[in-house]
Length: 94
Image (tube, rainbow, N blue to C red; front, side):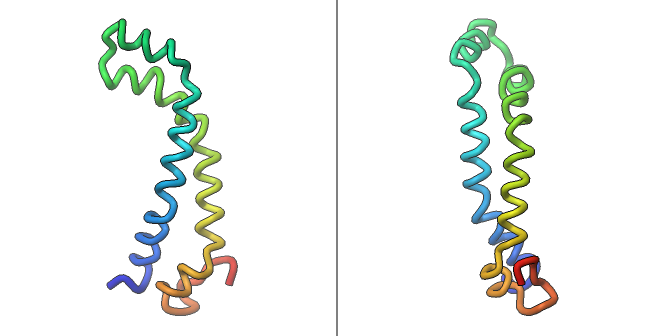
């Protein structure tokens, strides 16, 4: 059943996942190209590359992205009214 809490969670995920991905890609664009080349030349494993290059960049962008998406979800009136089915599942804007 799409109407109810599960539908609200699926819809919020569907609408906000592209925004989160875009913010994370923007954070990864901040890693210098020389670092990626150096990681390739040193034959770093994908896990080591993630730990040393990607995770520090993502970690700095994560709080801002989480806060922005949380605010968008809390104030989404139309989605909750359509799929929530009444006052029991309303958000702050109602």
